Length: 172
Ligand SMILES: [Zn+2]
Image (cartoon, rainbow, N blue to C red; front, side, top):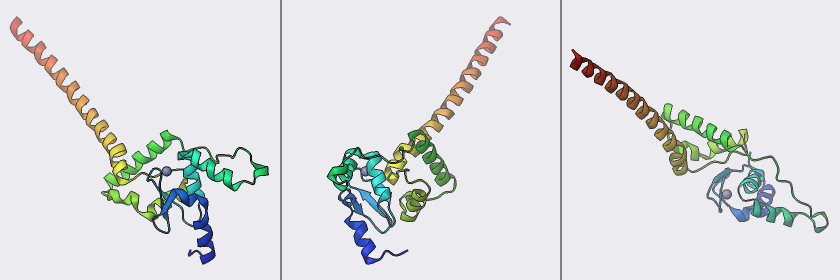
């Protein structure tokens, strides 16, 4: 849905834009950590990003918004997305991309980010480079370690069998 001129002005006038660069209609980039955040039509995702990742900056905005007489401790909104769950989700996403031969650039596509942000606004996306480094490389070394330990066990048992066999040969 297209925003009216008035709505667009209201969205861009929000003080939250001090910390974001509007990439396009759906995505903004955080000036503080360069993370891409989906924001279509409202700044609530941007505020949620600030509250979870840069609470000091978030407090600055909230404190300015609240009238002096109502200056209370602002609520931080919903609890942050559990790190463990986020890691599990990213691993599933990596498996989906790798097994389906989807390009890694998919995670930077505005509509994909918007889709995921609609499902879970607290899920914060990383760049393709960070995703490759943090998730895919970790999964790759874990898989490599598994294969390596499988070969070490197989080789060790094979070697000890062979040794026993040669001892047995000497006894003959
Ligand atoms: Zn940030």
